[in-house]
Amino acid sequence: MNFDLNKNIKPLLALLVVGLGFGYFFMCSIRDIKPDPQILIAVVGAVGTALGYFFGSSSGSAKKDDTISETLSNPVVTNAETVNLK
Image 1 (cartoon, rainbow, N blue to C red):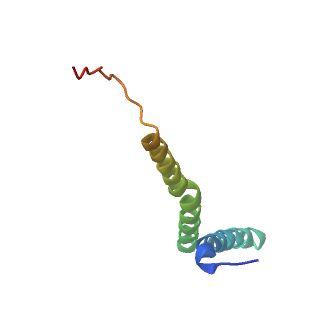
Image 2 (image 1 turned 180 degrees about the vertical axis):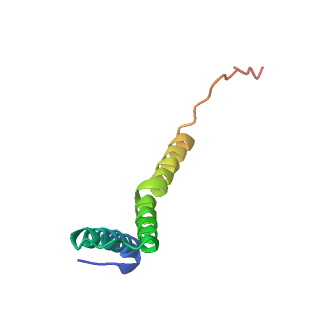
Image 3 (image 1 turned 90 degrees about the vertical axis):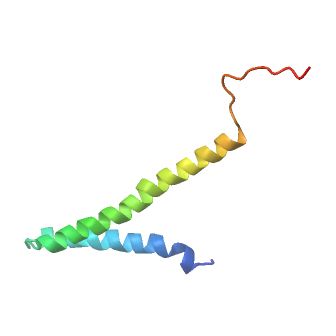
């Protein structure tokens, strides 16, 4: 099994951020600790950024790129006029 760290670093970091974020929420709820508002905002922002990167703009951008490449390979002509060269 070949593990390429350069290709897998972004998903691993995202999993780490999301895992630590949920760990913080669960630890605060299990121990009945009032979370620090600044840490809570930072954790929500980091988790939101990690999830947004993988499920938001990057997947939308990939779909857009696929649509553009399909459109360029199969052009559609509308309102075309017939031209006689004689």
